[in-house]
Length: 494
Image 1 (tube, rainbow, N blue to C red):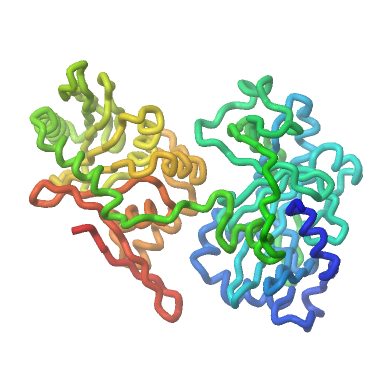
Image 2 (image 1 turned 135 degrees about the vertical axis):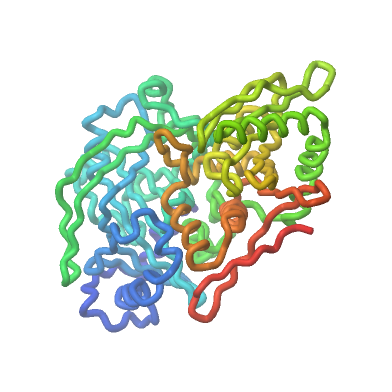
């Protein structure tokens, strides 16, 4: 039985209800529309998770239109989500005209589900992106579409995200039944003009396809009584697409009970499509790369190259870089030294390039630009292993790859934000978290970066060279007190 069929069957015993949040007392349950609203304002809105979304404060549940369903011990309340920005990913096919894409973008729904289980509440955003025939069938109004409805006949794409916007899963549906799973491939984004003719028909199984991003920006005005008005909406065809792959797998819920199936669908009980693999001991994981970083640092070409970079930096106050490669006999060779400006630079090219080194004029560790640039180089060549950064006080950091596929996925899940004239930055959610760790939690820059890399499974480790020439992984531990105030301490490898 397909997952969507199961979800449909579940609604037979837990019928749809629409609530006025000001007039709901009980649903024979400890969790309902009213308690979801209370939890949102009393707990969730004060949490770091709420702040993690770049749209926090610009999106709010429509509390007067909730749908409730109970599945085993799990209770779900879903509300429409009023948001100033909708980012819609449409499976692209050559048959969709620009006007069709505009209609689909404008009609797509974003809803928010509060999922109560084991005295915890998880938050999931659900994007309902209709296909054109479903949209036409419903006269371009799909406001009643919901997985929780008893008569779920949705056809199109369902995208499940967490609150900060990271994708948990993507499903294609037809008449309320899941027909395909979709996974975004790692790789560079492309413009729609360059891939339009190669887009696969999304009705086929086990085929490559493209997911193209469209946006709807609106002004959202919230009044004192909670009423919201959306106006001045502007549709934007970003022209950006990601390669994806789709398949028609066996029913993922075979052998699972109803509750386990719903857990899988929302990605809250383990087993979600994109769950990261279990992490091994961080020190053991980084040791092979740390040994290689030390070995290169003892090579005469490295030491002379490092000295040349530091000398050039001291003379002009700019960043300089040098790359390391190997000749046909396996001997280490170097590129010429490149010159940048006081906050950014470029990396020169050399045969069989596998590492590079550059200076920072200050004493800060690797930056977001250093990280993204390193992942780009490592993604383009399996040879690429290490990026060294030497600071003005002589400290030497190194970035090493621990999991290349995870690094590529980090690039997709947390795309860089361009900053013309400067290096690219992390997305707003990570910048905010980084700043909170430093401002409120007592973390240093290197502690914050090490924590971000591990928490978001970046596939890259941050190392620092000690007085004996060894490179040691930097780790950071997060601790919360009874009031959920977080502090950070260094737990670096020894």
